[in-house]
Length: 79
Image (cartoon, rainbow, N blue to C red; front, top):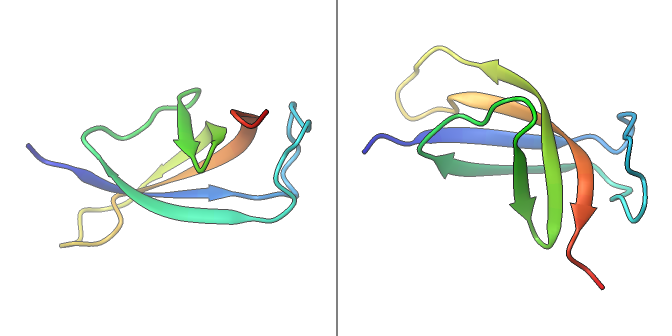
């Protein structure tokens, strides 16, 4: 089954609705998915949930990034 390489970015300076325990530094990670996330979807990374705010699709280019998802902070699983 085909997978898509997605670059996720979180900008600490982006205006977030949920600021409780929000990361204070920018984050970036790349992950392979079977589908490209949609606006409103949530993704999990290192005990934190991020909500997809924007999705930018790229032209297919060999083994490069297929899309970029800009995320806002949603919450965390830390106690």
